[in-house]
Length: 210
Image (cartoon, rainbow, N blue to C red; front, side):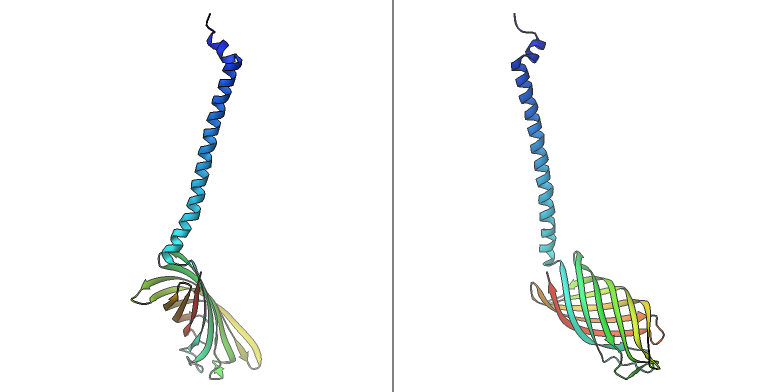
């Protein structure tokens, strides 16, 4: 007599066949999960590479020196004071950057700056920048907010004022190679401090891309 279905299922051969089928299903699921994981990993590795290739770089560090001063200090409205600035920026989208600028502007060219002597303006700004491709260089426009500190001596006593301000600037960069460029910047700053509110600066230096 042929074996009943239940007998075939619970026979050693039937149990072995069921076990093999279950193992096959589990193996197929494992392979699917592995392939899915590899696809996600590949996407994570490839997509940043594509963006990096499109922009040629992701981060920029710049070292700049220049001159600047205040337009409305009395006395001290001299824009030939020495200054320096460090730039740190990151590409966030096509031709779009976000970056910090950290710098110091000396304001002692005329000796007195308002009621201060030995004055200087330190600042940290955060700005968004958009770049434009010109014929043989890139130009840019940026706008942002900053924190400013005006320091100096008044009647022999050290004093300082801090304020939030606004910065607007234009940039130009001449590419030397993939990782190096020569950059020029002009910027205007509005700062709410007692001695003067309007400042302008011009900087030039090197930009390192990576």
